[in-house]
Length: 468
Ligand code: SIN
Image 1 (cartoon, rainbow, N blue to C red):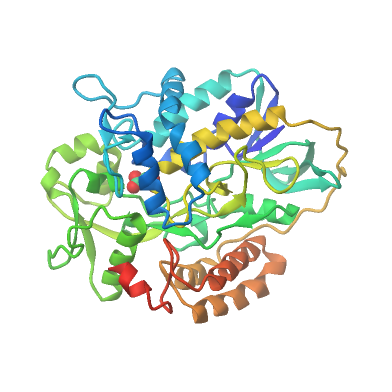
Image 2 (image 1 turned 60 degrees about the horizontal axis):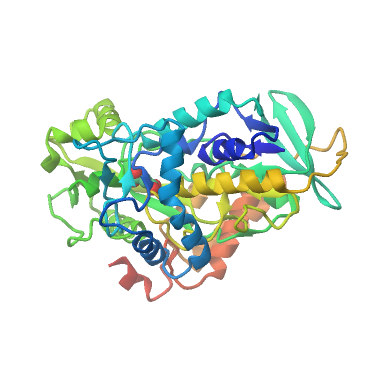
């Protein structure tokens, strides 16, 4: 069994598959390049005294704008409270309140405070620390510093992986492979994702013939720090959950009290305000000195940019943040291709519908990573004999695509722009698999003519209402 990707989904899968041997491919040291490690806000689970998984389910369905898979939502959200117990047992140190109970934060579109966090705003890093320790100690897991270049197949399904380390190419035979490769933010000019997150898992899956779905649903985070850096540092939604508000350069609050509306709504409002010629800021001054205590990493990011959030508004802009679409999988992470599994952001389970509820992604990555690891271990293994020297596809290159993706597949889209982008992507696709992926995204975005969730069409008369 091979797992490609060392974020939360891949690590949980490796642990869940034990004692069955797995080889975990990750480029660089374990954890390098994983968006999981960058997650600030936290992990949502209905563990509060006034909370219930049915409330968390209702919030997830509402944020997803009618396109969630209700069974997937019930299954994944329902598994949240027990997951927290397992993470605590693995040594994850979530923050606690003065009484010693797990501290719960609030984020947009959650009816209850239910966001577990760690080291203030370093939740992903803390979960990754504990999981990496556990995986390193697991005798069943072999960690390999390599990248996957191709999923190899035969008539019965997956037969291996063509991998690369530097200039060296080698074939790893396997009848079971899990993709846990993260998202696509790196295809955009403004992104909060690690730069390498350009949809490699989607390219591998598509080339092998697995089905992809919901590709047009790309979430833009409304509050990336607006500085001359790539990727842009995130200013967590938890900051608004603690009372910060969006203002413009005149000091006017333009959200009409809807700062904690679903992320797609806030991103469109910020985008529209910027388009109208304004600058947008997050005003966290009411938090005063508490800001640095609750958000130490964001404070350090701001300090690096010469900002003190306790006395200065933070300049922000929307940026590509999360891909709701992905490799179509069932409840066990199995894709349409026999032996190919996917979990985490690269997969599309149906949990997020057209717009992900904040902090549901670490939850999904952990629960679905575990489920896929168990399912892979139980999946019948077969003898495979992949060719020893298969051709390698051209290297993906996001550089020529970012301006087009940002101009035409950003917060607001229209048929003309999408069609023009599709023509350019089609011309580049034969030599650049990343362009092939962008083409698929553009085609699905073109085909969905009505606005829903994070997919907003300027040529849909309804969009103006939905942006309000
Ligand atoms: C954030 O901290 O605002 C991001 C959390 C998420 O994307 O779920």
